[in-house]
Length: 107
Image 1: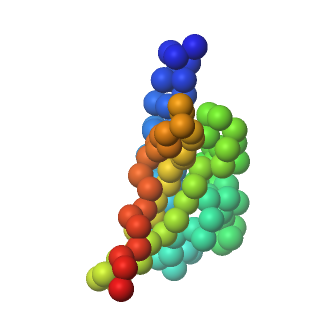
Image 2 (image 1 turned 60 degrees about the horizontal axis):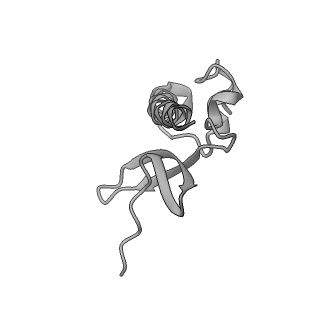
């Protein structure tokens, strides 16, 4: 069922974008103190007690049943940028849906 896998891939890609938008909404909420969530689960149950930023906790799981990965990266200008992605092995190769954070620079 290649078509089913392709559809799951598209769904995962769209979900990573939706989760990034939810992270931005969380950040912009005055109660967050302009912080991104520490983990994606905070989108379903915000620590500051507002309405959730996702429909339900199942939105935090990719079409293959694994939790989406999440990381907030410190930028050179002092800001932050969230990344949401999912990975899976297909024929011995890693396929990434969404965007992985860049590898840390070697010092």
